Image 1 (spheres, rainbow, N blue to C red):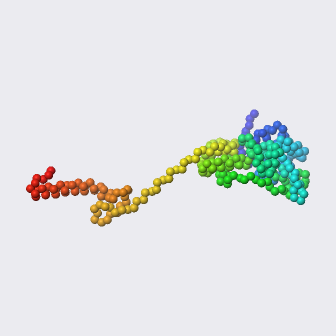
Image 2: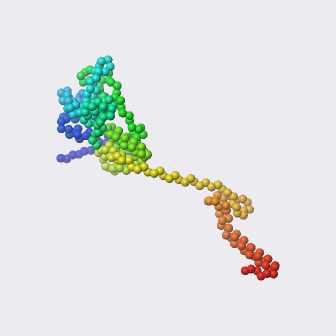
Image 3: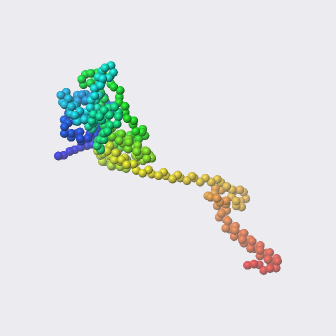
Length: 299
């Protein structure tokens, strides 16, 4: 068996092998489910509309929908809204959910769902349509309360990371995981440049494909490294003012000292010669005074 696969760099969705190889889901059920999971988060498309766009007839659609509901990938609720009109709320998830977990997702409460490594988290792929499959019209119920998002700084950091390389196209379902990991780095004191540098060092060469960019980023950010100690501040520049040389100058001589010296470089160089001349002068004066006093000159 030969296979030729070219990984797309944009406009693609990650679907688990559990869905693609599900032993009890028909091809129509898998197609409807993967189609719904590929829609944007705010897409307002019912299951029946997806089936119609996919060319699935009504009878096949009803059987596929029943399979998805039985396996826990689809949940529905019919509720009476304002003015007595009935509305159907549909929930599609990338992992099987129990009735209690589905209710928690619908109402915006934390769901006790732990997807396997590498799979996207649960998300609602479609809200209830204005026109239900049964033909009833209704007023949409208010949107479910969303859990508070992580810090804006961590989300912006993840967005900047995915723009480092065109191969880092991450599915929407993995963004919350990456934001949480980035927040851990920032909370420990790392800068955004530290995190981006860690990702750059872990990327394969430009000529190599990245088949699971979300999994790669999750691996690179799984354990924050130690925070580098801050660099020692540079010593302040030595600023020395000009001062007047204390040497024998006819006119005042200003110079810029390197330290605490009080003589300019010319006087420092001439100091040994002046000391030798002064010693010779003192010795000659002593010899003259001795001769005048009738004493032998001291050698």
